[in-house]
Length: 166
Image 1: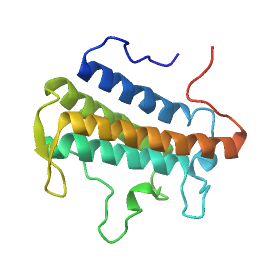
Image 2: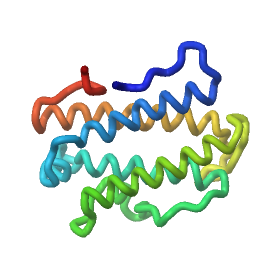
Image 3: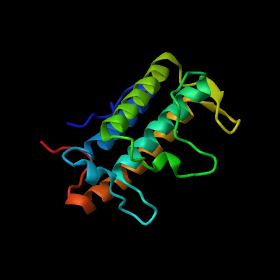
Image 4: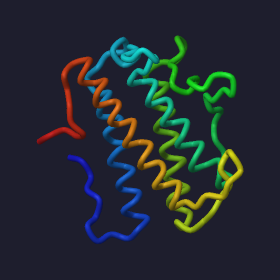
């Protein structure tokens, strides 16, 4: 069952649960599909389910860790290729990318747990951002791509929805 944002929760808890709900949907959209289906480009731009997971892992690290001085692993960004983080390379396995997302999520969760929502850091483009802003931004980013994934999944096998209905 999908997590519920607490109706009377504290700000950070509510934002974190909201983010987790969308993160869980991202992973759920992969369930039951084979490697070819997960890698299959479903749009003219080449968007695939697995590519979106790779992108989300990279931005989790990029927004939660980098601005607040936390280490990240090498990220698939390329200033000469704006879609590098969305592309699944032949040597990357599904397990590799799902594990990358799990590590990024765990690193982000550690930052969320440690810092107050008012804590500030420097974004990659130089502006100051608060943890609150990053949480809101990543809820938006993850929800947006979970919606993309819903459409791609429907095109692959007809499955829809944001969580398993029990």
